[in-house]
Length: 471
Image 1 (cartoon, rainbow, N blue to C red):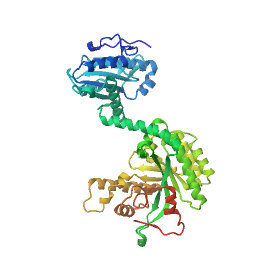
Image 2: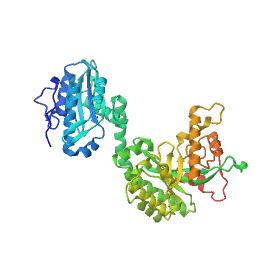
Image 3: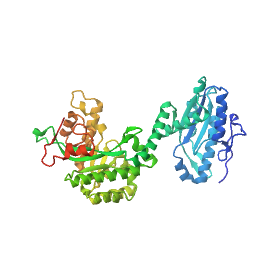
Image 4: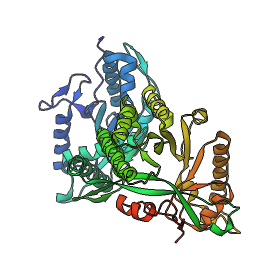
């Protein structure tokens, strides 16, 4: 690689013999930065701030420029950051594509203003021997105010807090600055605890499936059964009760499982438990159709469809009795493996349902494809409907009504079954029925319950039983 000129160090960044310079950026490394920060804190300096500057999407820069070009980019970025900081503070190299800044806030400008200056400086490309590239940064800010005595953070704690805030900035979309708060520490601790508990839970049998009924609404021509429902299926929902954490909802632990790579093991458990339960019901004569939710990550495994079909065959469950649900937003990132899995499942008789419909930007072209059989309206669109029958409709209600009508019309035009989720009131049910929706899920008709209770409530009296009644 062609060596670029060393970045100019500001007067505040003079060499410390104890600080090992980073060979790439010609800057102090983490250890040297922490030493200098400790000294500033120990000598009672005015309010000190630490900034963690993390480059967003650095992997794409490596792909664009190559390894040597990416190194040159970091070297050029270090020079630009040093120029922006000037005499306001100290610059050091952090881990990966990140930099650390110590700012003495008694100097001209504040941490927020410095962060704005850095973002402004990144609007211009950085030239390297392999070409030029643009970048944005997620900037985390942590402060140590004077007069806190023993409560004042030590250097490593302050550096860690800035890093946590930078991660929060990246999680929020990147290209922004975020100040550290104590709540971020609690959130990170909670996530770390869940990661460890997930590993134990998978081995200790802490996960279970609950089943929520799916009901068909009566036709308008049958007024005598206005409050009756006909069971047409069920959805398997994953539940986790940890001895340490108590009940943890899927909305919290599924994203963590996806990020840590444990989602594949969880989906394998769900498929096995789902097939076994349906096998028991089918053996007892309860051939209720059932749906299963699987992570988009699992569809990237080219053997996923064959594995699920094999489990169903072993438990003597007809593939035509099963529906696989995938979220609407997952359709945007469909790979060839995902499409192949869908086609394999569809060919065997498994139906495909698009969950949380109406919250993303689904491809209408893909909905037109015969692979999809069902769309499920997200509960957030159904929620405003309790007020829909009043004389004073709010803008939220009017907007939800318009979207719901459009989805129902789309479903009819494409020949898709449309299911409304989160139905909790009679007013919601009445509105949906009047607009032509024929299938619902929600607390009004039935909550998700353990398999044994689901069988007693919904399966034991089939066929020939009376329809379930609204409570």
